[in-house]
Image (cartoon, rainbow, N blue to C red; front, side, top):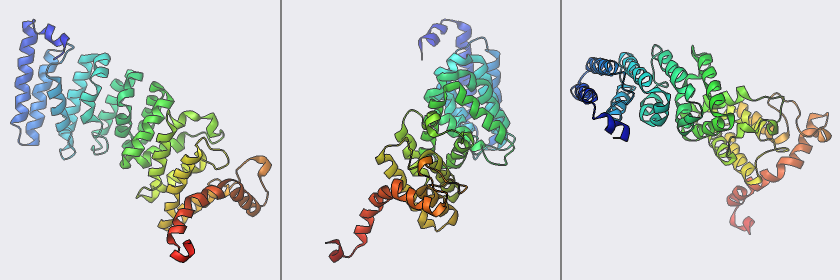
Length: 346
């Protein structure tokens, strides 16, 4: 209990409010069916609305836990919608400053919802993010990775809410600054396999291909090691679609002739990328070879202008010999040595 709440306890009406919240929360303990949960949420909502003049919501930790339980993916959309009503009532009452302070308390239930939500629930959830989270601006940073992990599942190609989700992500990036946004995004891709495809899709869609990586370094975020680890993990994902998109990203962000990454980082990425050959998938192999031989994904020649050859074969030979061969040998040599018979090793 914080100081502000302790001071309010001298107010008899606030004490009655606390007692009413306790009584409303008891209803959750006796709920055995989803209809009981909707009823319990309705009673809690009524108590909150009747005491909206108090910006300090009592028993907020217990309320946060109960709301998170009501957003369990196994429960029907009706329970989810009713719980989202409760969130909105609370957010209106407490205001942005208190929401920023208690962000983790209320977000633990909200962030996992979009991936499992019914179509009828998604617009309400997105509205909560748009109306109450976006205005928090830079105070979103402590929970930014969780927020992105929660929003990215809505970025599904062909989805009814694709454009709305994309716009929301763009507004979040503007609110927290691009560098912080991409740092959190790489963290999400590293730790949450389910959002890798939409996350990489977002990055690819927002790259300016007319500029070099040097001119859009904010995409790296504040820690290139985090980006390198996220990319290296994603290119070894079990999904071919994720691997394919990650190779597209590598082709643009980490060209051998001009990379922002250090040599050890390039070795890390190359070591991970070589695993795609085990798939025996032509779309993956084509992207890997394009990266090694100095071509973009469309087969156009890349590299320093002074070193480009009009003949693709000559260019590939020159580019490989000059920029990627040494790294490839360094990465593969230890494995080749391990495979040699004992006599040949000696």
